[in-house]
Length: 157
Length: 157
Image (tube, rainbow over all chains, first blue to last red; front, top):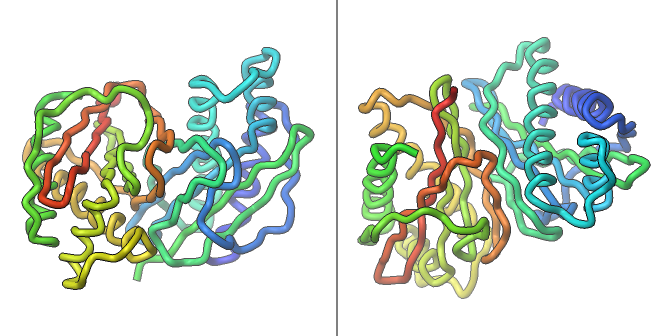
């Protein structure tokens, strides 16, 4: 995956969390993903496709982190556990982060369409990517705990 | 989900299994999905999107069933367990089934683009759909055991 593909996801993630949940998400050093298991307790997956590139983006939240994010989004106290409303919020955040990255990538002349997200509940669930291209992991730190954004994008031959 | 959306997935599934794995997949009575957990040990998820409709399709195989399908595809004895090659095959089958359904749906003037598939390994994993539209489950019986195709499609307002 090209290095120029990373920043759009990083910027979009920071913006979406700040705007939607008033949460400052501080990006840590990106790394290559080792293994195929989900990072956090709840994970959003979204497909990206165009004539030029194809791939998937994953956002995976630890429970404590997403409960605080959703509390801020809904202006309520944090829920005791992950429920339908939290899962829906993960779908929305996945959509918005990938939508934001799409806008930034379009400025670099990389255009693609978004599919709708699917969510997977559970930490350590095996979620292999379709493409054998390396997966970039961008870890984020927040006051409420960590989450990661993963992107696996390949240019079509 | 419109009834006319069901047959294209049913026909495509039968065709792909027959062509790729010489396996006769006999559709059982479609039903509405109850709950959000994955049916089989390995599951492919693919997004569909257009200006008109959006949704996801899931194909979820029991272990015995997918090991026999992959054995037939590779013309080898069945593997002892689900490995990378089996997961890749599930991605390909998901792609091909949804691609086949796309062709049939295009004849009904429902056009959409496919995202690339993601896979989830594990039975009973929670994989909620993004849309609250009802999910249709089409169960299939084969000599090697059962699998299901699920489709959750909504027309955009």
